[in-house]
Length: 300
Image 1: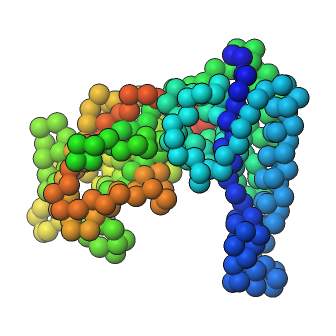
Image 2 (image 1 turned 120 degrees about the horizontal axis):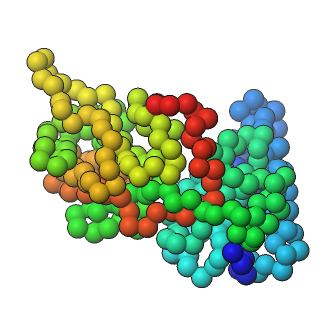
């Protein structure tokens, strides 16, 4: 695989944003006091920007053209490069994944002292070798299933890599909705519904009791959170694995419901009567990841 042009998607560190750009008084005060909550931020800041500089140097050494964009500024679909490199942790990888259809994605964990980097195959130590293997054709991207969301007939622009949470906009509020799978329709009340991919099966879905799937599995799952039933009542549609050819329909019975995509940064209103269809996305993410990466969590 010839790498002629690369897009680097990078995060801005917490220290960069709060201490340097915004000069946030509370943050600076805690930093000056050496507060325990900020004990790692300067270290992570230094690691991150050293890694970013290293990547730039490595690409220049290989005569690979590159552009850079902060993850918060990544808006349009990227289709004019050979590779997207996310520099940060899993959050940066997730943000970058929303902007690619067929261009492969490689994650670089830039601050290993504080970042787990589940999706990040590369780091400063092994990046050169991974780029060699990519260019030699020895390392191929893996297909990772994503979800497509259609809200009231309009497809949302972000393909879901981890999970979508359907719930009340207030975490203390009751989520009320109709859920439909195949020929089954059920009116429910709960704390919300997780719908997640194989990539997301090691996070919130795992914590909610779902099975851990191989990252390249061709299934997705849903789990109802904290179902609320009356005495003698029982819900049928609370948890299942679905094939990529199946779909879920959820109709809001809430005045102020919400959808949260891959965390808290992307959200949509889900009000009374709104209809959401969840299916496997047409384009899997093409990602340079370890196909066995989810196995470190054991089996669900």
